[in-house]
Amino acid sequence: MKALPSLGGSRVFGLDLMRALSLILIMCVHASPLFVAHSMAGARSLIPIGVIAVEIFFVLSGFLIGQILLKLADDRLTLKGFLLRRWFRTLPNYFLFLILNFLVYAFVLQVQVGDWRYFVFAQNLFAPMQVAFFPESWTLAAEEWFYFLTPMLLVVARAVFGPGRRAFFAVAIFALLLYPAMRIAAVVLGDPHWDEGIRKVVYLRLDTMMYGVALAGVKQYLPHLWQRLGGNLAVVGAVLLLGWLAAYALIDIEKAEWLAVLTFSVVPAGCAAFLPYLDRWQRASVPFWDRWITNLSLWSYSMYLLHFLLMMVVLKFGFEFASQSLFNAFSIVLVWAFVVGYLGGKIYRYFELPCTNLRDRFTA
Image (cartoon, rainbow, N blue to C red; front, side):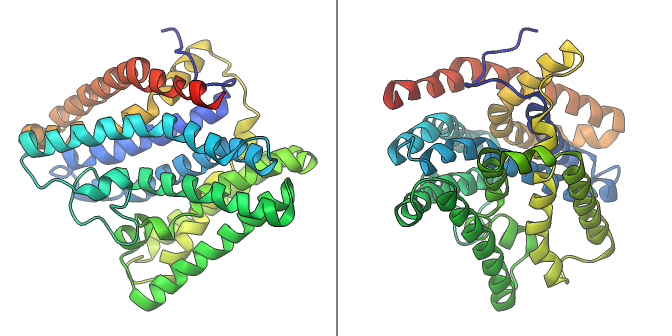
């Protein structure tokens, strides 16, 4: 299969692999309900893998968008230009799938649908989502608010410190200190559920992408340090992630406030630690993998928005069939994954990419 055109700039295989791995892990986790009749414990054991997969998605997005935020920090890009480029990239696909979710939930699944908050990314801004509708949209809400507020902070910092790295790192340090403090306050004052009440609530998660953004700043402003980072930092990241997985397995996170708070600093930091190493991995040694990993990375946004909706339909009409045998369950998953990939690729080619390319008309 020929690789589709990119969204701009040269592709880096290591970063494409990171995004593709995140997507695959998320899909595996969201397919697990088909196996609960065979192994409830096995399905539940995938929860921490899903947490890590989403954090990979966040820090990678931060690293890639951070390279555009650098232009804003250096006064080489306007706030309007940044926001327009971001919105043309993300909003058309989001609203396409939001409308599709409204239709499928109302007329196919026949369950409660969302409300106006989904149209302004307010569905989980300060509290968990109230209905089980378009649940994966919480990640898009967190991203859109981060990429709306961060450039504004950069403009303010640029006015105070002047263009360049002082303004950039001032914003990064501010975010990486403020939001962990807010999580501590939320746990001490309200004791929210670690997943629904912390992980998926926007105002408590706006530092997650900053780990990737901060490393983009290190690459730009501190090239000698960036060159020294790589394998050693990746080892640190592996230790952080394995340590968190061990803590999650041994300690009840529902009863351990310290673990609930540390999770959302340790896990994104661990994921981000692989970025310097993977950013150097320009091409795969086997062309087959280079093409397929690149395509999966390109299609990942459309596939991410599509996969859970299709799984809801599968669960409604195929759960009993999947419960009859493991062969049935795996067969359904393989068909579902193929359909998600096929449709995701088509949506990328014929809708997402053309909409993204419109940004050049307004930001040239």
